[in-house]
Length: 240
Image 1 (spheres, rainbow, N blue to C red):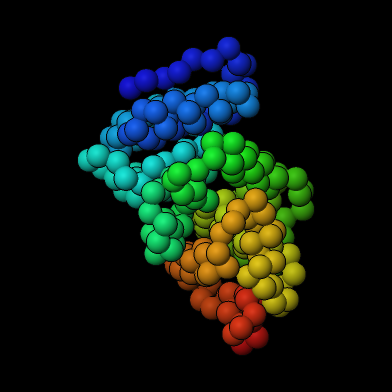
Image 2 (spheres, rainbow, N blue to C red):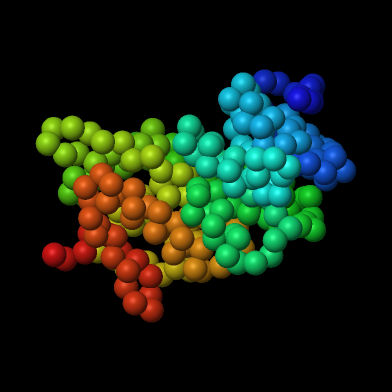
């Protein structure tokens, strides 16, 4: 385990870098520290999970191709415990691999070889989106659904019980965007612009996020709450 101390105040963001190539890890560390962030580093999946639980970082930069427990398994474990933002780092340019990671709850991804400055920009963008969910004070109510953007909580009210929805940051932003104007149809490109503004994600990546969001809503008894509009995008609260 290697934790890199920095002279920065403890209020700066802590980023866990999970990368088995020391040269790449060192470059990412240097660029993140230059932008005022603290870092800790893990070289394999087991060490990554231990550091995640011990250090509680604000962000995880997670390589997919790790020895032993791979990055996608690490992501599964993280999502089972917490909604900490995760950016996948991969040498696999195939769209299927990207979509799999996003279905598991990643907030963004970058492909090797990458520009370290771009990775830092992605980290800052995801952290900024995480902070922005605290800017609205009045909860949004649509039927049994309640979304509190200030406290970053989405609830389903059923029989006098409030059931929390375990959403990733991107899923939460998508749900809040759709719920803010129920029955309005939003295009995929608009949803990317609003919910992943600094990402170069393909439009169909939104389909992956929406699919997982719908499953979580269905598990809370909200079947068919999100409707796909053929050739356009999605809307919330379809006519029944």
